[in-house]
Image (tube, rainbow, N blue to C red):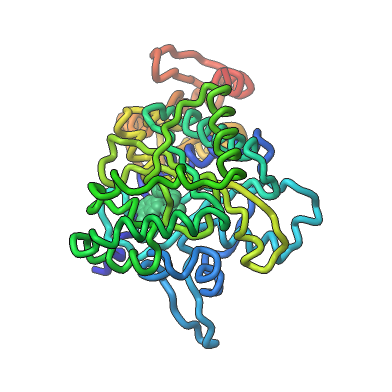
Length: 411
Ligand code: AMP
């Protein structure tokens, strides 16, 4: 037997749940004026080296990179923002006017150690608001993200925010952080020893060394006046909108492109992998990828973790059954039952027996498929043009014409 690759999943009985979440998220994003962008699942490796940052864990350790038959270095996308920005530049979307509001949905690939809520192929729904440097844009996307979570019934999440400063104030902070961690180096985990050299900010969100992060210097004490003003305004807007949040100086995010605002949605009940989504401002990314200076802000949700959270909150909606199951009493009526099912399928979800089951077997199959109505087709029904329709919930039964069936099922 050939099994699936470690860290990947087959979705079989829950496909409808995925579609439902995707549908709700799309609806909210569309209502907020976002349109969908679809980019390839693989890109030139250089995009992530430059975009995500070659000192990050993602680029250093987690990318699925290979050489294709033409000798190009290709990487399966580990995240969605860099590809969307590549497309934004490549198709000169700024010429269509700013802001551009784009959402995306699809699989991402990271070679991480699989565990509950952490996969090697996982799915993100993300949104990017391209072209505004104002804190109102940050609040716009945060509000939309909250609407999305609410749209699937999630409530027990926490919004954590922070500012990571910009190119003016961050270097000073990085220096202070290095000073702080220098003496602690022998006590740090192996990963953090490397991070100390390469990307000292990431020491703050290491779970193993969290005890040391508590007393580390805080970026919020090092922000320059512009970054501070941005952060203060953001907090004021959130307060005015009654959006609950917590300032958490350990939120630095694992990607290099963030400037100023960063945020995460945590779902504490999930344990170790409790981030159900995250995002922030990336004012330099488009420039770094060769476009013109275009400040932007965005976020992405992890669908697998949203599903885990929905299950924990008992918020998974009931699987929807089919609308109508058409039963043929005798073999002679099978074709007629198919005809009726075909006609009804223009309006409803339908099914019909193709296994040669007897009357009882067809009824039990209809229950198994959670059919709302059953239509029974016998010789008399065909002759008279009157069909017996049964409401499976109430047990109520009626003989009606075909045209009445449509009205009944609709209501
Ligand atoms: P990130 O870009 O790393 O902040 O990811 C955004 C969201 O994607 C996270 O908050 C998670 O919900 C989800 N996510 C990231 N990595 C994984 C993974 N390996 N497996 C499952 N979900 C993930």
